[in-house]
Image (tube, rainbow, N blue to C red; front, side):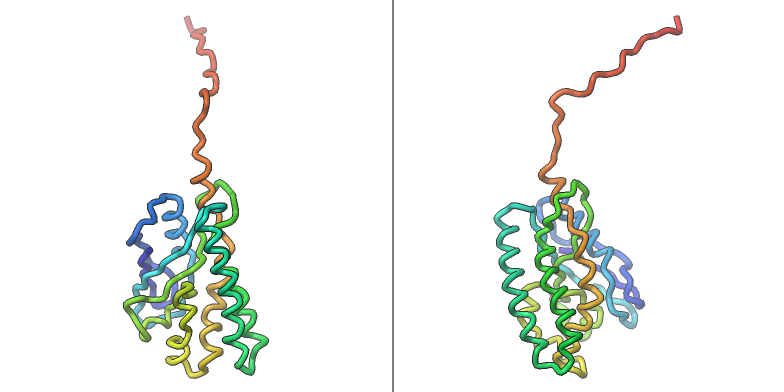
Length: 198
């Protein structure tokens, strides 16, 4: 879990790791994902806790997260369906589902880059702070009713703020370094040091 301080213009001011996952690569990915996030402008700025559900490709947690993401994808589209503007809302709902799949950090690249997959809205901050809300995590997306209340358009306003943030889930290769702690069997042969100066 990370704490993100947001500038009034919605840009990230600072990111602090508040709870470690126990895996340095995943922690780094969460920090980088938070740094790459964009938020809605908030008067005076804000501080928002975000929890990322990052997993290592091939792990049990990865498979579970993938299943949750698929379930989420089924749950999300029915919410915007009652809205008259379903052409815009499915595009917002579709990226929300990949954000869950992105949480799996499926790319096996050896880089420790970010994976902004799931972002929890301010847990202790109810309605005033959601103006700076990132893409909510799976538990929060299950209860989308609090988000529509502060907005004038109930069903269509929750996916619309998620749309600008949802394209960010694309970078997701942090767990690969975990699976590749290369221990060289033998160091490469050192170049022969010949002192020809004598």
